[in-house]
Image 1 (cartoon, rainbow, N blue to C red):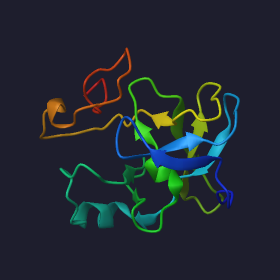
Image 2: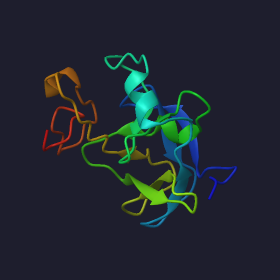
Image 3: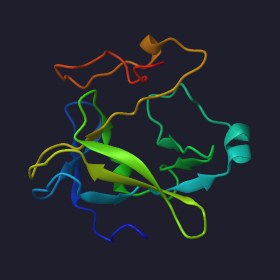
Image 4: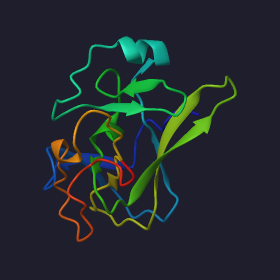
Length: 151
């Protein structure tokens, strides 16, 4: 399933970070916003990719099969959904008929028109401390990092 041509969000300046994605109308819990799109890398290509992992601005999304999506290359507006430790959306995988994975974004709670949309990036890092990936979400539940709780 392809994302709708018109995603139910608009881009504006975010109080959290750079450009953010905001709901253009009220949406109930479970509303699918669309697919996270961009250049696809196989697991082997992802390992070989020369990526600045320490950049403050990347649009990379790793999938459970080891592949990766780079939203900066051919991506859509979902790449501007910022991180929050108290997200109102989530990313989830759907296996398609051709056995590839589609990454979709849906609301976790009811979202109101004008609300900024957030997911928990839950980064998994190997050689860097969690403090190297600070969070600016301003949530009362902020853990201070975009790194996954278990990491």
